[in-house]
Image 1 (spheres, protein in one colour):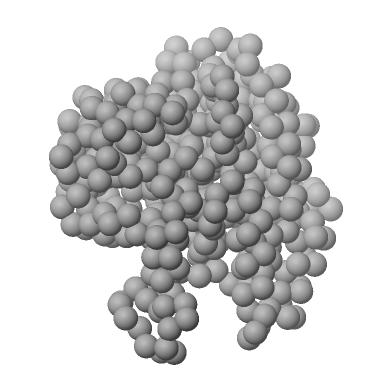
Image 2: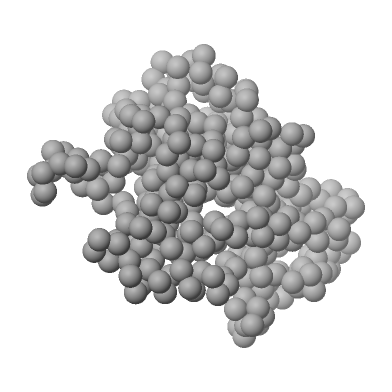
Length: 383
Ligand SMILES: *Cc1c(COP(=O)(O)O)cnc(C)c1O
């Protein structure tokens, strides 16, 4: 069953993939049968409550995506036209795109060479009079130096939105990933550790932010207000009851999902960590990574760029992904005119990105498949 679910029939080892059991099927079936009309929000409420408790925050709001969670965070925190928001160069564009939705400008900061997450010192250097928020990203399930980032933000009066889309369940000191900012945001896209197909969550301790996000999520309706009497033009960002049911089932199995992620990393580490000039995800002291994507940085001496390595692995029926390109280098951000300056300033991002590859990290991977991937990698690199 496991084999068939993970795409063995297609003969490829996929880069990501969920772990669905009869529990998920049972909850979703129940939502399908009963989650309508007066019961339409029962699964949302259970999912939100359990999620807030897990992350250790007062409030959680289930949404249709993490991108929406970032959009609502920016709006609720009052970020708008003329403002600047600092984001790391290396992340999925979903971290940064909502900054443009609200008419603000993204400013790209460098990453740390070990954690691959936002560098606190680079962040500090990018702060200007216009900076209103920073969005640190828990990249690939690793954690940034959250203490330094939050203390810099606090003294500069800048709001923090923690993008924990890739780090559900990670720890930094006593806190869970997603608990450090004014808001924390999560993704339940099919590739993520826990999934609702598509979906997201926003968490916060701030009642004002919570209420504003609820209002904006639902076409500017006051929760107890007059029916069809909207007071502002807003958005429609809810998830469905079936998605909430799936999310609740996955959340109830989160320990098992996280343990498997860590085991997959350990299997890779046993095969790869002693190889010369091959760097794997770094777990900083006092943190617990969830290794959402097991990632290798291939030393320059191998003389192979990530695209060529991915092509060679693909010929061996292995799906991989490139380490994110620096956002400032993307055609999407051409009009900002930052590429040249950013390339000079954000040297770590530009130095690492060409040599990074995400290896298959789906929850249904077997040890045998991981050995196959590692043997393929060694044979391509001739080690
Ligand atoms: C997946 C991801 C997102 C976006 O999530 P969606 O649910 O697809 O909107 C945002 N940030 C990071 C870092 C991600 O990996």
